Length: 434
Image 1: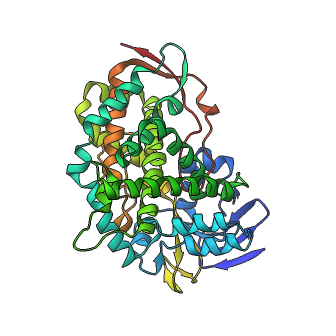
Image 2: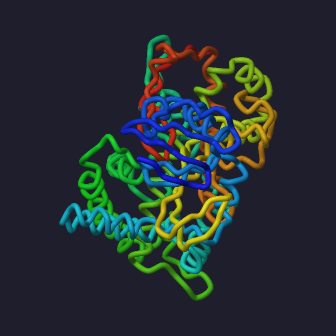
């Protein structure tokens, strides 16, 4: 099948494509057009880097989407008013044509009110009302509680034998923290992690899970009912937590009940999965570059700068999605209303036109232009909290353990096959205390 695009002719077989580039005497190497194939999941930097260096704006016929891979294109797309973040309603319509589940429909209704899926003016209003819970003073106030959680988890880590760093540390930490911040009692926090896990496969596009819609619905409805009970409780008797803060009015405006539910589910999900991957990917990067780990041990004061480089080098986002609102020309191609657009963060963050030696981890680089947390209007609101958690977590691990080593061959590590997130299934390590 042929699809004539401004980039040339793209010949598509069932599983691979050959790219013929105008002005080039050679076509790009054949590659698997499945953007969540083993190669693309294991090493998105090489996979998407090939596209970046040959066809930086590419129509993928398998996914029926434009794929943008350079830093310039990704940041320009995030400023492009003709692209919309509102992709949940069209997705909802497509899914509901395949299933007649009221629970799945309700799940999509809640997701459609997530701030990350809204455009102005709704996005502007919601972000204004929610941003107060991520004010610097509010985030800094979590430091002592965060240190206590980190210390407790560190103390329970065994030494001298393999341990899954994710299951025992990187995943519980943000799940405990965000549940605590929302006002969830300790005995219920395990439920929040289970509900977040059930949502992951739907929100991040786990194409290997055929039951992802119904699985997400089960988790979402249980979470909704639980949150309704908490909201009713804190309406009557506010406490020092985020739900009570979100119930307050701001400039005469406040969140509706539905908006509160959607915002709390977003906080739970975003505050858990993204931070887990940031901490885990960060430790793996340090293990891959032991000289950088040694530098960080000797100079812990560079941690803030180091985290920006870790986020650039192997951050928790694998791509962002937009839909084309209206026909328009962008990057030399004609985009049509309704088409999907993938903005590939990892490729943009390894673009040699912006970052020197992009495939090298350099903790003193301070890459302020990376797009690991997005860019512009939809820059991650929770980034300050994620940074604080990752700072305290990695600092404590390096301080507590004199030796940290992989407990398996690097090539055997498995990554979650999702379109939007970049995270390992497990990270077995051996830790030796000082």
